[in-house]
Image (cartoon, rainbow, N blue to C red; front, side, top):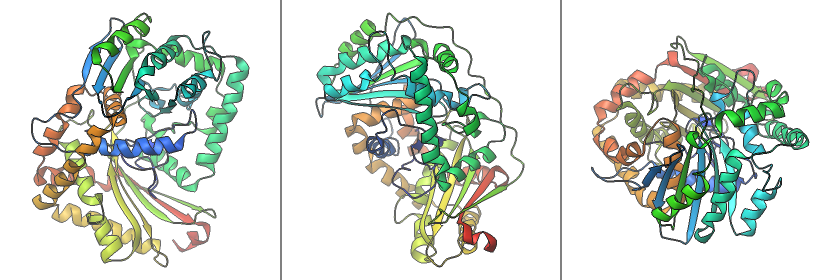
Length: 483
């Protein structure tokens, strides 16, 4: 339904594939810098929606209620362990920033830990930790989310904490100034000092000509440096309100009691008049682009290609997103997949080869390919081989047998999806912030089950057009002259 790419732990460049990224758009997750937890979440989330069930099956069976102030509450019972995942998702992300203020959504995510009149700066996470829990937050192009994983009998505590900072954030000037330096250092260490991340940033800026998905979530350096306390508070007051939020609680809970607690702590919060999410439209793609980044820090060269593709929300033909999910599984679903077998096993040209697709975006999204050469293999040779595989796909298509096997692999992962309470909270929150519904999530297996090889092949030929693509080459500096 909302395919979450398992980019962490892989060697492919991100956004379709980059650190702290999923669903095609960059996700910056670092409020507590707990990357180990993020890896666990990304892996579990990858299982969540790469599942296919028999027709009429349901995925999470959530209980839902909308409070009088507009807050959506979604509850998933999972009694496998006495723990709970409490998440608040806001329908706002980097793509909703004012032009010239890139990075403000992520910066505010950091500042949300700076306290309220009830909770002093820095105490939020300490309280959670003292009660045996872990918390974090992340920002993407379409949403911002905050979560706590904790013993089920501590749910009321974290709900009270989260509801408090939804409307009562206070920001001292010195806290804003010091945290901005933290974010700037994040950008330097995770993007500016990482050639692969720099290339990915440039690829997205080239792929999306006008849409704000072309902006990095962490912000462009010059604009990031100019952000202020006023910018942060304006953004907070504009977007952080119960009628722009979704509360998702999954775990060892009684839905009726969760909803009662939500009424107690979130119910009194005042809704706001929300601005429309107006985004610049993307003009028709009219030509292939290529970006080459050569850097002496590069140890492993790579080839990447991104295509503009329809998302679940933006697709006119609603069969296309599921067709692309099946296609990605055929191309990159393990050691027997097309790309791995052809380029790594049979031809011995690549150390790795991948494809991925992102259904969960509010607007258009990406379908991507990436590969890295084996030692001694030139980038020219690898690039020619990747292009040949894409051309073969478009010429001969995939078979019904490949589709059947892809569905079998997807179906096998449903047990893991249902076992993980984190997955349910993650999948449902992302869906609801990117224009989908709970019914869409629950119906996803049926839509996947209905996809045919003809639909996959027709969609591949419609989407994988060179004119809607950008190709990136990441090279050691010494190779630049040979390309």
